[in-house]
Structures are given as C-alpha cells and as structure tokens.
Amino acid sequence: PLKEYCFLNYLYKLKTNSNSLLISMRKQFLFLALALIVSVNSFSQVIFENGYFISENNQKTSCLIENMDWKNTPVNFRYKLDESGEIKTADIKTIKEFAVSGQFKFISSVVKIDRSSKRIEFMTKDKNPVFSTEKLFLQVLMEGKANLYLYNDGTVRRFFYKTDNSEIKQLVYKTYLADDDHTAKNNQFREQLFIDLKCDGVLMNEYEKLTY
Image 1: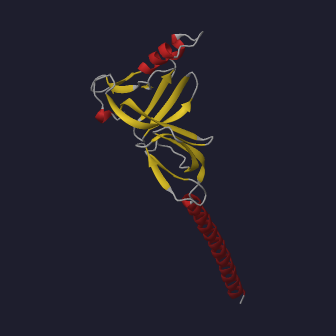
Image 2 (image 1 turned 60 degrees about the horizontal axis):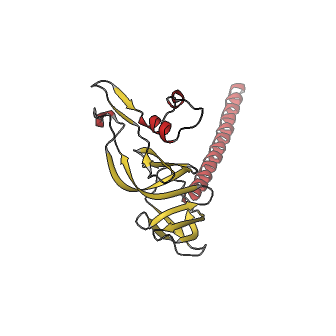
C-alpha cells in the first residue's frame, strides 16, 4: 500500500508539473503571438511626415512625405498634400529636391559616377575610375562652404562633394587587382579633399589617415 501511495503521489505531482508547464508554454506562445501582431502592425503602418519637394521648374510644395527611413538612395517617393489627401508618387524625372523635415534631404543631380565593383571576381587591374554620367538622387549629409553627399543603392556606395559654384564631383575610391592574388586601393579622395577642401593647420599626413 505504501508503494502504491508513493507511486500515485508521484503520478499526481507529475501531472501537476505537466499542467504547469503546459500553462507556462501557452502563456509564452500567447505573448509571442501578440508581440508578432504588434510588430507586423508597426511595420505595415504608413508614416507620412512634414516635408517638401521642389519641382524642376523651382516650385516648392509643402506636403506630407512617406518616411521610409531610407537606407538606400530612393528613385522615387510618395507624398500627399494633407492628412486626408490622395497618395501620389514623384520621381527623379520631375523633382529637383525633397526633404522630410529635420531628418532627410535629397537633391537630384547629373553626376559622373564610378560603379566599379568591390567584389574581387568583378575587379580589373585598372586603378582609374570608370565614370558614367547619370541623373541620381543624392542624400545631403552636410551643407556649408562645401557640401557632402551620399549615393548608396545597396551595392554601390559613393560620396560626392561640391565647393562654391563648382559642379558636384565624386570622391574617388576604388579597389582593384594589383595582381592575380592581391588587391590594392586607389585613395584619390584624400588628395581631392586636401586640394579642394584644404584647412589651415591640417597637414597632408592627416588626410592620409582618412578612410572612405
């Protein structure tokens, strides 16, 4: 009888523990499901924020622009004129500049860009950039006596700069094949910065430390 009692007591505890574990798992599953629903809703929510765009004929329009938190440079954007307005799309063909207030600013410009690959299987032994002329949106990183811009499409990442009334130029950086087994780097951007953006008291060896 004692053995039977102990065995039954063991089975009761085992059942109780199993029920507790099952309840705990259900709670965890419910929590994860709710978290996933909230995450999906947050991800799918369209956020329009105050901004503006300037057309090719220099007409500035205040509007609400869909903030995509652009990691890559866009080729278009969506906007509406007010909260209840129709959502429209504008692209580089008709837009000179657009911005989300206090966050992002892009300008369109015809520039010479080197799209040489950084993947070794596509590299050549030519250290010089291979430029093509394209009209692109450029993200404005800094404005002043000299402006700094960024273009990034996910595979090509290039910086551009402009001083005074000069045209926008790419800061040149290129990885190329020194031989069949080794690569080398063309760091011409350091020389460009030293010549075009020279600062009093800053020596050339300081520019040599800069990375792209």
